[in-house]
Image: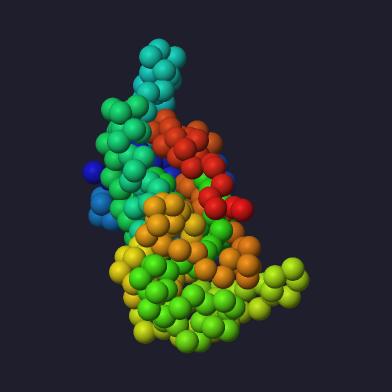
Length: 304
Protein backbone atom coordinates (compact mmCIF):
# COMPACT_ATOMS: atom_id res chain seq x y z
CA UNK A 1 0.00 0.00 0.00
CA UNK A 2 1.37 3.43 -0.94
CA UNK A 3 2.25 6.00 1.72
CA UNK A 4 -0.44 8.34 0.50
CA UNK A 5 -0.43 10.56 3.59
CA UNK A 6 3.29 11.24 3.22
CA UNK A 7 2.93 11.97 -0.48
CA UNK A 8 -0.03 14.23 0.22
CA UNK A 9 1.92 16.12 2.88
CA UNK A 10 4.84 16.65 0.48
CA UNK A 11 2.47 18.01 -2.19
CA UNK A 12 0.64 20.29 0.24
CA UNK A 13 3.85 21.78 1.63
CA UNK A 14 5.33 22.30 -1.84
CA UNK A 15 2.13 24.06 -2.93
CA UNK A 16 1.88 26.18 0.23
CA UNK A 17 5.58 27.16 0.35
CA UNK A 18 6.01 27.54 -3.39
CA UNK A 19 9.06 25.33 -3.90
CA UNK A 20 10.35 21.80 -3.51
CA UNK A 21 13.39 23.13 -1.65
CA UNK A 22 11.32 24.85 1.04
CA UNK A 23 9.10 21.80 1.44
CA UNK A 24 12.19 19.59 1.63
CA UNK A 25 13.69 21.70 4.42
CA UNK A 26 10.46 21.37 6.40
CA UNK A 27 10.31 17.61 5.89
CA UNK A 28 14.02 16.88 6.12
CA UNK A 29 14.12 15.66 2.51
CA UNK A 30 16.07 16.70 -0.57
CA UNK A 31 14.21 18.75 -3.23
CA UNK A 32 14.45 15.80 -5.63
CA UNK A 33 12.83 13.50 -3.05
CA UNK A 34 9.90 15.92 -2.64
CA UNK A 35 9.59 16.17 -6.43
CA UNK A 36 9.42 12.36 -6.67
CA UNK A 37 6.65 12.22 -4.07
CA UNK A 38 4.60 14.86 -5.89
CA UNK A 39 5.15 13.11 -9.22
CA UNK A 40 3.92 9.87 -7.64
CA UNK A 41 0.65 11.60 -6.65
CA UNK A 42 0.24 13.03 -10.15
CA UNK A 43 0.90 9.66 -11.76
CA UNK A 44 -1.65 7.96 -9.56
CA UNK A 45 -4.29 10.61 -10.26
CA UNK A 46 -3.46 10.97 -13.94
CA UNK A 47 -3.50 14.75 -13.58
CA UNK A 48 -0.94 17.55 -13.40
CA UNK A 49 -1.24 19.28 -10.02
CA UNK A 50 1.73 21.67 -10.11
CA UNK A 51 3.24 23.63 -12.97
CA UNK A 52 7.01 23.81 -12.47
CA UNK A 53 9.25 26.67 -13.56
CA UNK A 54 12.75 27.75 -12.63
CA UNK A 55 11.30 30.43 -10.33
CA UNK A 56 8.27 28.93 -8.60
CA UNK A 57 5.52 26.34 -8.51
CA UNK A 58 1.97 27.15 -9.59
CA UNK A 59 -1.17 25.14 -8.91
CA UNK A 60 -3.31 23.91 -11.77
CA UNK A 61 -7.11 23.94 -11.31
CA UNK A 62 -6.88 20.24 -10.48
CA UNK A 63 -4.11 21.03 -8.01
CA UNK A 64 -6.23 23.67 -6.27
CA UNK A 65 -9.08 21.22 -5.83
CA UNK A 66 -6.76 18.48 -4.57
CA UNK A 67 -4.96 20.87 -2.18
CA UNK A 68 -8.21 21.90 -0.50
CA UNK A 69 -9.14 18.27 0.18
CA UNK A 70 -5.57 17.36 1.14
CA UNK A 71 -5.35 20.11 3.74
CA UNK A 72 -8.58 18.89 5.33
CA UNK A 73 -7.40 15.25 5.35
CA UNK A 74 -3.99 16.14 6.78
CA UNK A 75 -5.64 18.17 9.54
CA UNK A 76 -7.77 15.15 10.41
CA UNK A 77 -4.72 12.88 10.47
CA UNK A 78 -2.87 15.34 12.70
CA UNK A 79 -5.82 15.49 15.09
CA UNK A 80 -6.07 11.70 15.20
CA UNK A 81 -2.36 11.33 15.95
CA UNK A 82 -2.49 13.96 18.69
CA UNK A 83 -5.40 12.12 20.25
CA UNK A 84 -3.51 8.83 20.27
CA UNK A 85 -0.27 10.40 21.54
CA UNK A 86 -2.03 12.14 24.43
CA UNK A 87 -3.85 8.95 25.37
CA UNK A 88 -2.29 5.50 25.26
CA UNK A 89 1.11 6.78 24.13
CA UNK A 90 3.11 6.18 20.99
CA UNK A 91 3.09 2.39 20.72
CA UNK A 92 5.35 1.01 17.95
CA UNK A 93 3.04 -0.56 15.39
CA UNK A 94 2.61 -1.15 11.68
CA UNK A 95 4.90 -2.36 8.91
CA UNK A 96 8.58 -1.54 9.34
CA UNK A 97 10.68 -1.79 6.17
CA UNK A 98 14.37 -2.36 6.87
CA UNK A 99 17.24 -2.91 4.43
CA UNK A 100 20.63 -4.22 5.57
CA UNK A 101 23.75 -5.45 3.84
CA UNK A 102 23.86 -9.23 3.50
CA UNK A 103 26.76 -9.90 5.85
CA UNK A 104 25.69 -7.52 8.60
CA UNK A 105 22.07 -8.56 8.29
CA UNK A 106 22.83 -12.27 8.65
CA UNK A 107 25.42 -11.81 11.41
CA UNK A 108 23.92 -9.04 13.51
CA UNK A 109 20.35 -8.07 12.59
CA UNK A 110 18.56 -11.38 12.04
CA UNK A 111 19.61 -12.83 15.43
CA UNK A 112 18.00 -9.83 17.17
CA UNK A 113 14.67 -9.97 15.32
CA UNK A 114 12.87 -12.45 17.65
CA UNK A 115 13.67 -10.38 20.74
CA UNK A 116 12.58 -7.13 19.08
CA UNK A 117 9.26 -8.56 17.88
CA UNK A 118 8.62 -10.10 21.29
CA UNK A 119 9.07 -6.64 22.78
CA UNK A 120 6.95 -4.92 20.09
CA UNK A 121 4.34 -7.44 18.88
CA UNK A 122 2.34 -4.81 16.96
CA UNK A 123 5.20 -4.28 14.49
CA UNK A 124 5.36 -6.25 11.23
CA UNK A 125 8.98 -6.39 10.03
CA UNK A 126 9.75 -6.37 6.29
CA UNK A 127 13.49 -7.14 6.12
CA UNK A 128 15.50 -7.07 2.86
CA UNK A 129 19.16 -8.07 2.72
CA UNK A 130 21.13 -6.57 -0.15
CA UNK A 131 24.51 -4.93 -0.67
CA UNK A 132 23.10 -2.63 -3.37
CA UNK A 133 22.31 1.04 -2.89
CA UNK A 134 18.87 1.85 -1.49
CA UNK A 135 16.74 4.92 -2.27
CA UNK A 136 14.65 5.24 0.90
CA UNK A 137 11.96 7.28 -0.86
CA UNK A 138 11.79 5.30 -4.10
CA UNK A 139 11.99 1.91 -2.36
CA UNK A 140 9.68 2.97 0.51
CA UNK A 141 12.27 1.88 3.05
CA UNK A 142 12.14 3.14 6.64
CA UNK A 143 15.69 2.22 7.68
CA UNK A 144 18.79 1.28 5.68
CA UNK A 145 21.73 -0.17 7.61
CA UNK A 146 24.99 0.48 5.81
CA UNK A 147 28.70 0.97 6.46
CA UNK A 148 30.92 3.79 5.27
CA UNK A 149 30.53 7.57 5.00
CA UNK A 150 27.11 9.19 4.72
CA UNK A 151 26.67 10.44 1.15
CA UNK A 152 23.10 11.79 1.14
CA UNK A 153 22.71 14.88 3.33
CA UNK A 154 18.92 14.37 3.37
CA UNK A 155 19.43 11.26 5.52
CA UNK A 156 20.07 11.05 9.24
CA UNK A 157 22.49 8.49 10.64
CA UNK A 158 22.60 6.71 13.99
CA UNK A 159 25.87 4.96 14.74
CA UNK A 160 25.26 1.31 15.61
CA UNK A 161 28.76 -0.15 15.70
CA UNK A 162 32.43 0.36 14.95
CA UNK A 163 34.17 -2.77 13.75
CA UNK A 164 37.72 -3.30 12.57
CA UNK A 165 38.72 -5.67 9.77
CA UNK A 166 40.66 -8.87 10.20
CA UNK A 167 42.25 -11.41 7.83
CA UNK A 168 41.13 -14.97 8.54
CA UNK A 169 41.49 -18.48 7.18
CA UNK A 170 40.24 -21.94 8.08
CA UNK A 171 42.67 -24.18 10.02
CA UNK A 172 42.50 -26.74 7.18
CA UNK A 173 43.60 -24.12 4.63
CA UNK A 174 46.52 -23.04 6.79
CA UNK A 175 47.54 -26.66 7.34
CA UNK A 176 47.74 -27.16 3.56
CA UNK A 177 49.31 -23.85 2.54
CA UNK A 178 51.11 -22.59 5.63
CA UNK A 179 50.55 -19.52 7.81
CA UNK A 180 51.64 -16.23 6.23
CA UNK A 181 54.17 -14.52 8.48
CA UNK A 182 54.28 -11.18 6.65
CA UNK A 183 52.03 -9.48 4.06
CA UNK A 184 54.35 -10.34 1.17
CA UNK A 185 53.69 -14.05 1.87
CA UNK A 186 50.15 -13.50 0.60
CA UNK A 187 51.48 -13.54 -2.94
CA UNK A 188 51.65 -17.34 -2.57
CA UNK A 189 48.10 -17.62 -1.17
CA UNK A 190 44.53 -17.48 -2.47
CA UNK A 191 42.90 -14.26 -1.26
CA UNK A 192 39.16 -13.78 -1.72
CA UNK A 193 38.25 -10.46 -3.33
CA UNK A 194 35.25 -8.23 -3.91
CA UNK A 195 33.89 -7.54 -7.39
CA UNK A 196 32.67 -4.01 -6.75
CA UNK A 197 34.69 -0.81 -6.61
CA UNK A 198 36.14 -0.07 -3.19
CA UNK A 199 38.03 2.92 -1.80
CA UNK A 200 41.14 0.70 -1.62
CA UNK A 201 41.98 -1.69 -4.46
CA UNK A 202 44.11 -3.91 -2.23
CA UNK A 203 44.57 -4.96 1.38
CA UNK A 204 46.06 -2.29 3.70
CA UNK A 205 48.84 -3.07 6.17
CA UNK A 206 51.00 -1.26 8.71
CA UNK A 207 54.48 -2.45 9.70
CA UNK A 208 54.79 -3.56 13.36
CA UNK A 209 55.91 -0.80 15.68
CA UNK A 210 56.03 1.72 12.88
CA UNK A 211 53.85 4.31 11.18
CA UNK A 212 54.43 3.20 7.61
CA UNK A 213 51.16 2.09 5.99
CA UNK A 214 50.82 0.57 2.54
CA UNK A 215 48.36 -1.31 0.35
CA UNK A 216 49.16 -4.65 -1.22
CA UNK A 217 47.36 -6.05 -4.27
CA UNK A 218 46.75 -9.71 -3.44
CA UNK A 219 46.01 -12.64 -5.79
CA UNK A 220 42.90 -14.79 -5.71
CA UNK A 221 40.65 -16.90 -7.93
CA UNK A 222 37.24 -15.86 -6.53
CA UNK A 223 35.48 -12.51 -6.30
CA UNK A 224 32.08 -11.94 -4.71
CA UNK A 225 29.83 -9.01 -3.95
CA UNK A 226 29.26 -9.60 -0.24
CA UNK A 227 31.06 -10.68 2.90
CA UNK A 228 28.61 -13.49 3.69
CA UNK A 229 29.78 -15.35 0.57
CA UNK A 230 33.42 -14.80 1.53
CA UNK A 231 32.68 -16.16 4.99
CA UNK A 232 31.22 -19.41 3.65
CA UNK A 233 34.09 -19.90 1.20
CA UNK A 234 36.65 -19.15 3.88
CA UNK A 235 35.07 -21.66 6.26
CA UNK A 236 35.26 -24.22 3.45
CA UNK A 237 39.03 -23.73 3.24
CA UNK A 238 39.17 -22.02 -0.15
CA UNK A 239 41.41 -19.16 0.91
CA UNK A 240 42.01 -16.12 3.08
CA UNK A 241 39.39 -13.40 3.51
CA UNK A 242 39.55 -9.88 4.90
CA UNK A 243 36.25 -9.19 6.65
CA UNK A 244 34.60 -7.01 9.25
CA UNK A 245 35.12 -8.44 12.72
CA UNK A 246 31.37 -8.80 13.25
CA UNK A 247 31.38 -11.40 10.47
CA UNK A 248 34.01 -13.63 11.99
CA UNK A 249 34.26 -13.18 15.77
CA UNK A 250 32.04 -16.20 16.54
CA UNK A 251 33.96 -18.38 14.08
CA UNK A 252 37.25 -17.31 15.66
CA UNK A 253 35.96 -17.98 19.17
CA UNK A 254 34.79 -21.46 18.13
CA UNK A 255 37.96 -22.32 16.21
CA UNK A 256 36.44 -22.46 12.72
CA UNK A 257 38.61 -19.55 11.57
CA UNK A 258 42.03 -18.25 12.60
CA UNK A 259 43.16 -14.59 12.35
CA UNK A 260 46.48 -14.05 10.59
CA UNK A 261 48.92 -11.15 10.15
CA UNK A 262 47.48 -9.35 13.18
CA UNK A 263 50.85 -7.71 13.83
CA UNK A 264 50.45 -5.99 10.45
CA UNK A 265 46.77 -5.01 10.87
CA UNK A 266 46.31 -1.45 9.63
CA UNK A 267 43.80 -0.82 12.42
CA UNK A 268 41.15 0.75 10.23
CA UNK A 269 37.56 0.58 11.44
CA UNK A 270 34.28 0.85 9.62
CA UNK A 271 31.26 2.62 11.03
CA UNK A 272 27.90 0.94 10.59
CA UNK A 273 24.93 3.29 10.71
CA UNK A 274 21.16 3.11 10.65
CA UNK A 275 20.05 5.61 7.99
CA UNK A 276 16.59 7.14 7.85
CA UNK A 277 14.88 10.15 6.34
CA UNK A 278 15.38 13.23 8.46
CA UNK A 279 11.89 13.75 9.78
CA UNK A 280 11.57 15.88 12.92
CA UNK A 281 9.36 13.22 14.51
CA UNK A 282 10.20 9.63 13.73
CA UNK A 283 7.44 7.04 13.74
CA UNK A 284 7.51 5.05 16.96
CA UNK A 285 8.29 1.79 15.11
CA UNK A 286 11.35 3.34 13.42
CA UNK A 287 12.71 4.89 16.59
CA UNK A 288 12.11 1.71 18.58
CA UNK A 289 14.02 -0.48 16.10
CA UNK A 290 16.98 1.90 15.83
CA UNK A 291 17.18 2.28 19.61
CA UNK A 292 16.97 -1.51 20.03
CA UNK A 293 19.82 -2.13 17.57
CA UNK A 294 21.98 0.60 19.12
CA UNK A 295 21.57 -0.90 22.60
CA UNK A 296 22.49 -4.42 21.49
CA UNK A 297 25.26 -3.62 19.00
CA UNK A 298 27.17 -0.83 20.74
CA UNK A 299 29.93 -3.07 22.18
CA UNK A 300 33.26 -2.84 20.30
CA UNK A 301 33.99 -5.80 18.04
CA UNK A 302 37.50 -7.28 18.18
CA UNK A 303 38.91 -3.86 18.93
CA UNK A 304 42.06 -5.08 20.63
